[in-house]
Length: 109
Image (tube, rainbow, N blue to C red; front, side, top):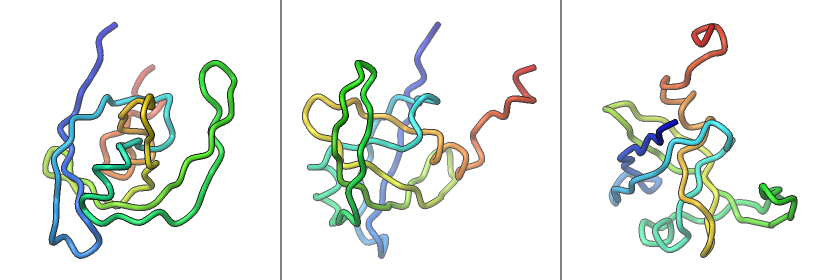
């Protein structure tokens, strides 16, 4: 089984600053995880904190916010997790569906 890496452009709220980041498309992750430093560089501010369960069962608190993303000439706003050191950088299902790039269960059959 292969991995799919997507080049994703992220924008700040007024679209005056953008940054390109390569993210692993992960259909097991609800949200997109981007390094905190990269989000801070384009002035994205966290809006709240949520708990996430890791694959090994630990619970980690992470701040979340919202960004505008662009993939394959499609744009959408999405929830983003402020990833910390050791977290994976991923493009999650919420973003994929918002961009119209998700695959439904019916298409898999």
